[in-house]
Image (tube, rainbow, N blue to C red; front, side, top):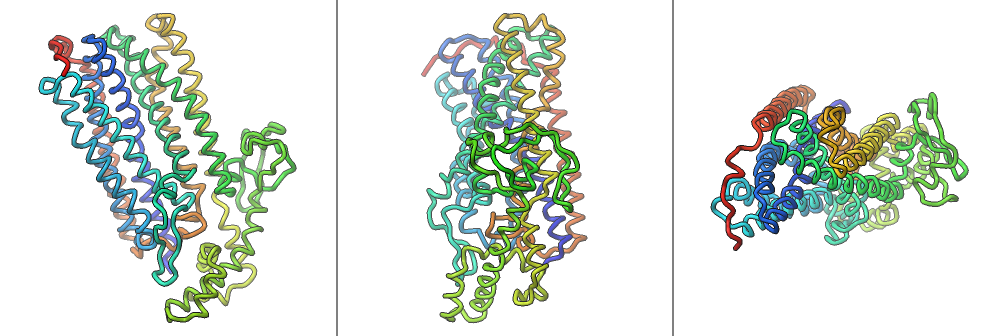
Length: 518
C-alpha cells in the first residue's frame, strides 16, 4: 500500500510540470501555422513586408519552442520515476504513440526549425516555405500522438488486460489512435493553440500601433491574426461541445462534475450557470439555474436524462462487488499462473477489475474478502471526481472562450473598416487579452485531468495504485526544485520575448532582396 500523501505529492508534481509545459505548447501549435500562412502569401505575392513579418514572428516562435522542449522532456521521465506502476501496467500501449511522436514529429520540427529561422539567405523562397510548413506540421503531429496517448487514459480503446502478464497489452493501434476521444481532443486542443497564437500576435501588433511603431507590419499582422483568431475561436467552442458530448458518454461522472449535477433530474433538466458544490454533503450550497437547458446542451436531445453523481456512485457499487472477484482471482493467478479455476473466475469478472482495484485500498493487508458494505460504499463515492474543482475549471474555461469570441468579433469589425489604429481604447485592451487563451488552456487541462479522477486509466487503473514508492521527503524536495526551476524558465521566456518585442523587427529584414523561386 502506497502512502496516500506520496500519491498526492506525485500528482502535485506532475500537475506542476504539466501546467508549466502547457503554457508553451498552444502558442507553438498556432504560431507555426500562422507563420506558414504568411510565408505562403510572401511566396505567392513577393511582397517584402510578408517576409519581414515571418522573420520577426519566427524569432518569438523559436524562444517559445526552446522553452517548450525544455519543460516537456521532464514529463516523459516522470512516468517512469513517479508513476512506475502505471508505466509498467500500460507501457505497451502508452509507449507506442510517445515513440511515434519522438521519431515522426519531434525530430521533424527540431530538425527544420533552425533552417526556418536562419536559412533565409541559404534557401530559395519555395524551399524555405516547405521548411516552414514542415515545422508547423511537426508541431501539430507531435500534439496528435501525445493527445492520443492521453485519450487512452480518458477512454481506453485498442487494448486488453493480460492476467498472466499482469499488464495491459496493445490489441489495435488504429483503435488507439482513432478513437472518438483522441480525434475530438486533438482537434479541440489544436484549435485552442490557434486561438492562443492569434491573440498573442494581435496583442503585440496592437501594442506597436498604440506606440506608432512598425505600423505596416503591425496592421497586417493584426488583420491576419484577427481573421485566424475568429475562425479558431468559433471552432474551439464548437469542437469543445463535441468533445464534451464524446467525453460525457465515456465518462458520465466527469460530465456530472462539470455541471454540478448531484442527482438525476427529469429531462429537460435545468443548467447550473453557477453553483457551490459540497462533496461531503452531495449537494450545492447555492445554484443559479436556467430551466430546461442542460439536457439539450449535453445530450443534444430533450428526453435523454443526465445521470447525477449520486446515482452514478450507487450504480458503481455492484461493479465494485463484481470487481472484487476479479481482484481475488488475479491474486490467485499471481501465486499460481496455471490455476484454471482462477483464470475462469477472472474471465467472468474481468470487465470490473478496475473497480475492484479501486476498493482494494480499503482492504486490510490487501485482502478484498475482508471488505464490508461501508468500505464498498466509500469506494463508490471515490469514483466521483472533485465536483467543485471540475465545475469551476470548466466554467472559467468557457468564460474565457466566450470573452475571446466577443473580442475577435470586435477586432474583425475594426480592422475591416480600417479603424483599429484609431481605436486607442481597443489597442490598450488587446495586449491584456493575451493572457486569456493561456488561462483557458490551463483550465481546460484541469477539467480533463481532474474530471478523470480517481483513475489514471479510466475504470481500469486507479490513481492510488499507480504511483512509485518514494518517500514524502524526496517528493517535497523534488517538487520544490521543479517549482523553482520552472518558474525561472518562465521568467527567462517572458524576459526574452519582451526584449524581442521591444526591439521589434530589424530594419534590415525588409531590405534583403527577394530570393528567386526554386
